[in-house]
Image 1 (cartoon, one colour):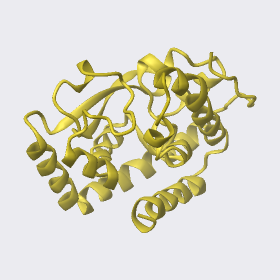
Image 2 (spheres, one colour; image 1 turned 180 degrees about the horizontal axis):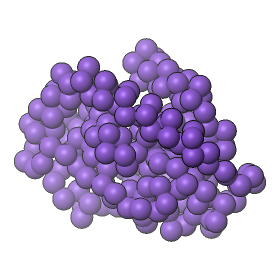
Image 3 (cartoon, one colour; image 1 turned 60 degrees about the vertical axis):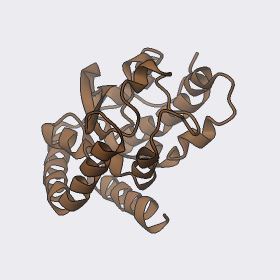
Length: 215
């Protein structure tokens, strides 16, 4: 079973939530406009990699446990879900060569901006998780579902090399549920309990540093 996390109950301030929505909408719209050439490039590459749709729509659990479709550029062969597990493992054979480039550059995640504009996600927030994994959450861990999941955030940055962490695991699914996921949730719970506009700006800057500068 997942580890429990000792954290105080999360109390969401309605005024802060409203301000966060305005922040998300303004910056996501600007980002989509400014990054439109990259969006076009990602769309082109996703279409050229193999037969199939440009977007991959992943089922994710959002605020108040509402399931939504998270948009990403497709990086795997068509019907990849039927060819293996829901986890992407180290050197997963379902990923196309172009798909590996999209993942390495993080271009595959640009369509998340659509989810932010629609109000299903935030720019910064807990990692969006699939329903099959959310069912393993403890009652304490479910507190992360009081807010919208984010494109980026503390757990996303800390686990950007998740495929490497799953490398060599005989049962990747069990390792993820019992080891990796609780650690992610611990980071997300701390974020939800301490979030602020200043911290969100800080996480955006850290994301730019990690994805662009350090790369």
